[in-house]
Image 1 (cartoon, rainbow, N blue to C red):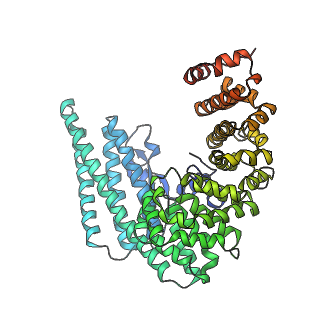
Image 2: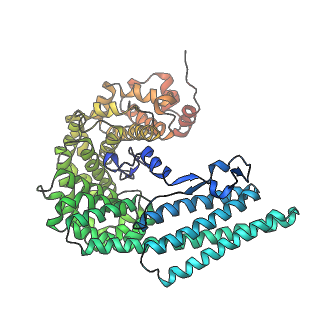
Length: 532
């Protein structure tokens, strides 16, 4: 699965979770924001300036010290929810360690947090529903029960009795967590409904921009909130924005939010219900829209066609607009003014080649091989392993077509594929290393498929592809010890050896080609590098 910088969800194998420089949430900035809302928990653990507990991790206790004002119930919910979730997790850890003094003190603090969340949200929001009132009551009852039972545990010395009480505490903690999750979901649903109604009813560009921005921020909190937004009509409201000319300047923001929501099944189903694919096709094919708008539409296409999301494979409405979408995406790749735009467009194309086999034939007719390979020499558009991952994915899927081999040779594509076998990370981050592995693996797969054509095989041998494949097989560091790269390279090497056996030494043939594939794999995967 691909992971772009910043973790964006959209990628051609499962597009990066959050998103390039437009969508990145700087980790230090996020930490600084959270830090303002926490402080050492002295008010509960200190008496006359002396800590009651002398345990070493007391200083790690955090409480919500300030934060959103009374007019911001949504942010208040998110912050309080984060703190309570953290406390629940910590109590579970201390319970597993039988640290009863800590379990009790943290249970008391949890009760305070829960009571604060209930009272603050009630003060900041409209009158709560009857259902919320019932769940609030159940939550506070369980908090009191947890505090009481953990206090009794402090007085028990019999280990057998303590073990039975531990099971009771664990069950109470679990039920409390369920009530908390239910209450938080009800409250967040209420706030999302208010945002969606505001977007739906607004004809003011500034109000719509602000509210859409709030909705996008919520999508970054994870899949559960995306499901709530989809369920409460967020997809419908955002496509309504994308169909109004008066809101054209807000299309990128609305599309970006849609791409995030569509990481969940509910979002994709809602998109299909409102003919969202047709709307995306209209935006992509309309040259009057700025490049940034069409790039965001490409990002939504990439998300809803991700091969790693099983529910997207039944998006029947996509097939009706596929030809015009593919055509528009190839054009966007060709005219892209930046690496990000090219990445989003090529990622969408890569996913579409998994989505339906007809897409590869369309790409061949649209001369996409020329567009993609030409872009490889343009550092402004293609300068990261993430982008090359998209390109080689498209080539690998197109290489099953007979005509593809001649087009690759004509565009000097074998040499570019050879270069991808040498892809190396610059930063050494796990995401970039993984992207480089995917590029090497898919380059080898593409070479193996194309080498069924003797002309491609001879060109590959002439360019010393055989020696590079042998190096990748024999040297774990060259492939970052990746088994997937090893298997792909062994397959490509065997295909080339079948066409041009003269390029191999006897020892390479006997170890890498002649044995069963699994035997060669075991030999290479256990091979230690020689430093002689």
